[in-house]
Image 1 (cartoon, helix red, strand yellow):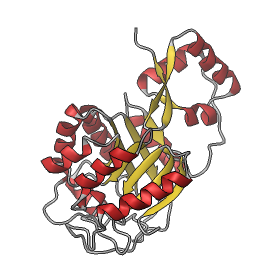
Image 2 (tube, one colour):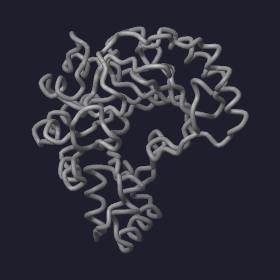
Image 3 (tube, helix red, strand yellow):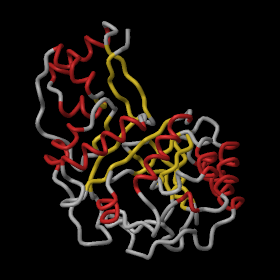
Image 4 (cartoon, helix red, strand yellow):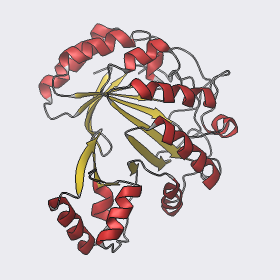
Length: 303
């Protein structure tokens, strides 16, 4: 297969079948310091774009071989929304996906384009990146094409989210010494309170990066994530946490009210005693499980 890869098991989205819209070379309007692809000058288009019919042919063949797929993921060696035929591709994928979800992994750079927004509105799960709240931080981490301003992007994300009828995920990737500080995260949190995504994913560098930057420690991530409030947060762990906490019933209710906990959080951070209380609260219908873009969260049930 030239354009289709997988399926792969993603803890964030389930079993994923990927589509690479730029298999030959990196085509991106960012040059992120943490990218696993070799650094390259930002561009505004995908070089040698594939034909929609060729992609669809490969997707059909793969779906016949692999039935146990949760999401069909549109991605790229770069930014998938730069693909000139994205609208046609999404329309064709929606015709053949059946019970699968359609997912796109975007850096969010084109969210102000009305045409792009119209295409994204046809996708089941849209993942956008938001690594920074300030232009200084944005230029250091994402190294965008000239003229792209972070404040403009998150204002457009706010507008897009108001009418978007499917699931919106915002991803934050932390880089040591750049956006791993309380002030930047608090500013991002203020933005998220307005965007109101369905889920926020937060993690750090996991693969060898393009530039000499370092990941943030797990303890640091756990400290910073406390400043992200009132939203389902999925922390991406490299290793499973070893420390488990005891919570009583009121503490669990308070915790879930402040920040819904993922199934991973419950399984790996909660003691057996605390897990039993969670089961009790579920039976009493005081809390409920909610699947958000492939991740199960526990939330307080509204009266």
